Length: 225
Image 1 (tube, one colour):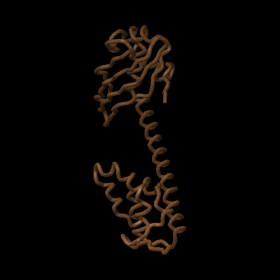
Image 2 (tube, helix red, strand yellow; image 1 turned 180 degrees about the vertical axis):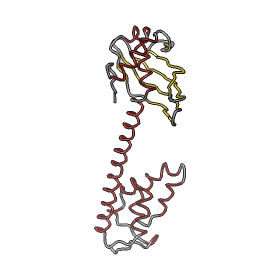
Image 3 (cartoon, one colour; image 1 turned 60 degrees about the horizontal axis):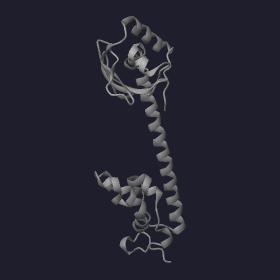
Image 4 (tube, helix red, strand yellow; image 1 turned 60 degrees about the vertical axis):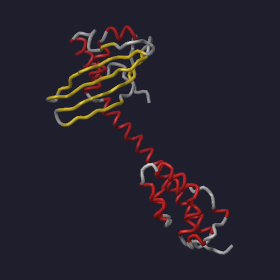
């Protein structure tokens, strides 16, 4: 078959090339620029960019053959294989980066004074202890955590589990003059109506002891990932 690559609409796409293109799917607009297929720039159009990777995956090979001159079918295959490998590597790198960021953010929140204060209040609350049993393990905190110098806010939630029950702790705390203050902290027990107010049911001494123990790592605080 005559090589008609790069002739636009006049090009005849070899049947063996008209198949799914992983490089176009993964790298979309980057692949498009490299293969003279500028319709891939529709990736920057909202809504359209949700379906464009699939369109490029289906039509990418044919468009690349028509829009760019290739030495041969084998040449085209070699180049597209490199794009596909590059796409897979890029996706893996993004996943690794995302997981790393998630672990870093989780670690920051887990070691924050607001989280440690919440765990201490949980451990010092007699009603929570009676409902959950001991020992109590806590999960990874999620939510919103912001600090700026001596001020900050924390809206966190984390799972808790004891021998008797499981639940979720909800915390709203603020930081002012470099000191954290719990505005609201509640425990929701699975399968039980209402919430336990963790700001009640514990005395100041037990709370201080609990916070010190959390900082020393004496309590069982395990991340369930």
